[in-house]
Every structure is written in C-alpha cells, then in structure tokens.
Length: 185
Ligand SMILES: [Fe+2]
Ligand SMILES: [Fe+2]
Image 1 (spheres, rainbow, N blue to C red):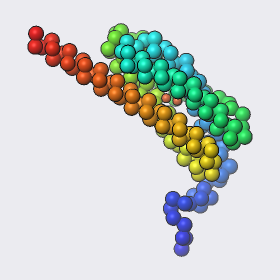
Image 2 (image 1 turned 90 degrees about the vertical axis):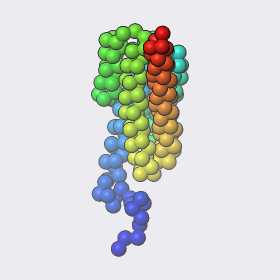
Image 3 (image 1 turned 135 degrees about the horizontal axis):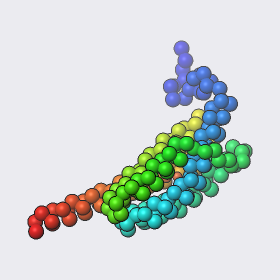
Image 4 (image 1 turned 180 degrees about the vertical axis):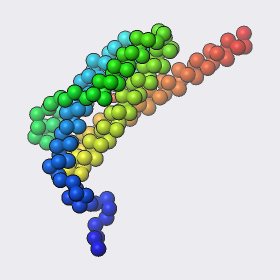
C-alpha cells in the first residue's frame, strides 16, 4: 500500500512525463503572453467606447495592471531559463473580436457599457482559468518562483473581474432607480 497522500502524488505516479508537462506549460505561457499583449491594444478601445466613469476607471486601471503582467510573464520565462515568446491565442483573438462587434453594434451609453462589461468579464474569466492552470502546473513542476508570480497575476485578474461586477451592479441599480422615478412621475 502506498503511504503518500493523494495531494502529494508526483507527476510520474499520474503517468505524466515531467518533460511533457513542461512543454505544455511553456506553450500555455506563450499563449497567454500573446493574449496580454493583445489586451493592451483592446483595452484602450474599450475605454474610448465606454461612458460610465467607474467603468472607464476600472478599465484604465486594468490596462496598467496588464502592462505589468507582461513584465511579470517575462520574469516567469526568465525563471525557467527561456526567452519570452508569444504565440497567437485563438481564444483571446475571438474574445477581442467579439468585444469589437459588441461596441460597433450597440447603442452609445448604458447599453454599450453593459456590452463592454460583458465582453471584459469573459476575458477575465478566460485569464482566471489560464492562470489557475499555469500556477498549478508550475507548482507540480516544482517551480516555486514561477508559481508565485502566476498566483500574483491570478489575484489581479480576480479583482479586475470583481470590480467589473461592482460596476455592473451599481449601473444596473442606477438604471432601476431611474426607471422607478419615471414611473412615479
Ligand atoms: Fe491579464
Ligand atoms: Fe485581465
């Protein structure tokens, strides 16, 4: 009988070759590196199209964070002795394209803001899934420095998502109040 606890199983025990997991980790890293770079171009467009001040502030703040994340990813590449390299992320390209379509097709103001929030939250959720996976891969591979940096980015993505939810909720509340006031007239 094995004495190791389930959580302490090594990659070999799962039948995963460490070199193959390392290759997958690197591929995913290149993918998200491309995605973050794409977002530094997409976020300013969202800012330009947004009306709500809180939404603009949240997007601008996350643009700054995203620029920092690119540097953090470069540190991760460095920590594993690899050159930072970007590989087109089809999923993020699709999400960005969808955001552009929403902005083009929606009416200026509250409706477009709602569309921007929806599109931005899809991006955040994609990033949360990716960084969660990358952090776990790094931990499994025993790369503690990389895991720490990836966890930092993961936390930023989570709080960006929460801020967008806050904006959505407060905007919807305001809208509801306006509608109530109209009914009372
Ligand atoms: Fe990001
Ligand atoms: Fe993000």
